Image (cartoon, rainbow, N blue to C red):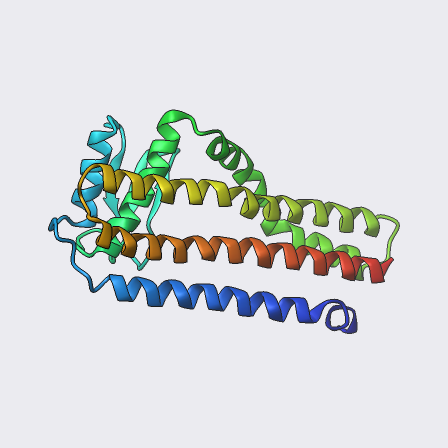
Length: 230
């Protein structure tokens, strides 16, 4: 246990604080603008339908998904999922989030290269995140000729997961920029409402920045632990 507590344990605490602050900021910002009703009267779903129609994207279905802020776009299924807080809400926060997910659908439709990279990397990164730690632990605690191989393989797989969190950043920021532009150009929102949308989407983007920072810190901590093991 001393191996873990003595090797960058403070890094883990800092990462947890960063993650909690980003999540708290998103919740408070969404709650604030979730109480501001859109002047257009549109809901998250009707706004998404209009945005997709205007973009000429007819192949994407819009479906409800349970939970709060669980909104996502599935490029494999071409389904835009809108959560309980977004689907039937006519707040500017809900419409902003729905427009952001439409931004991902637009990225997919035009073959946005960073999104292609993320979609290609994601399967390997998900597998890597699941099996990297068992391999790392085997490499650290089981003394054998192959322990270093297990350790290096685990670090390599965890690095894929870290790379995915970094690769997501330009994709998420671009989707938010698209959302603001389409809401402005379509006349769905005025400048005052767009300010609120920017606040919500910026807070959401910061959770991705925090995730990337935490992942990088965790990888650094693993390198420190591995260095002591060697």
